[in-house]
Image (cartoon, rainbow, N blue to C red; front, side):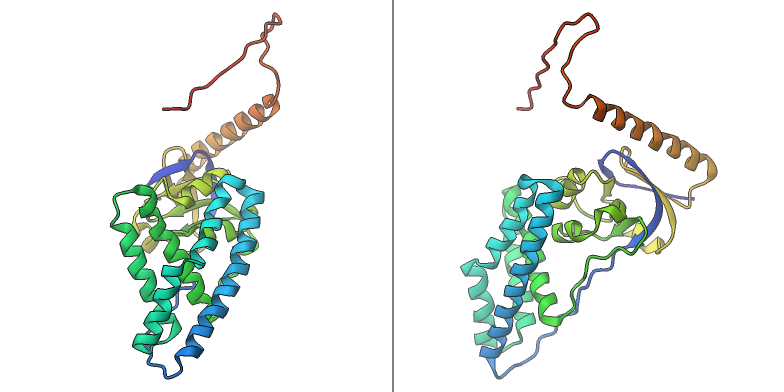
Length: 277
């Protein structure tokens, strides 16, 4: 048995086999081109496809996590139309006579670096968004597009990190839990996992990914942030009992949801919560 520790971002226990998420990242090389107009038209076509893809993802997010958390994909759609972003791509193609993929990748690096260096946490988070939309455009340019498939079985999805669009694109009915080597509890992906009611542990470290493989049996404890790979019988029994107790508690809460708070002797109690701090 191997034990790893990260930060739990949604409290629940998941038991099952691991599926290592494989990103469709294609290596981008700089290529000299003669027809710069053709490259700019390629970018335009890739962006149009990205708009279609993100619109579908936004609609899926609305159904699964609600309007508030689906807004991230509205931001992504707005970023695709950002004048500074698009002018940068075109200027690089025109002035350096390079291929579309390289121009998008260089623009992505420049803008992500700019956002990351800002003091404001909200603006720092935009670095990941720029990377996400840029990777989507590059994937469309190269034809290396993921279908979001997680196979036929329910799996514990493990990755270096997951972009918001990758998280939403996965079929949540086939995802037992998310485990990432990196990321923060305030990242869009962590927030989406919580709202999808899927156990999630982030920040486990790169060593975790180097020591696991597809099909490994594991248990994810989203309460404590612990992951057990090839757990022994004692650990499996303890966490199976913990999982059942948690599921029973959540079922009980669902039966109480929406009912009036009335004591046994008939007194109605109003309950208020202050979430300001």
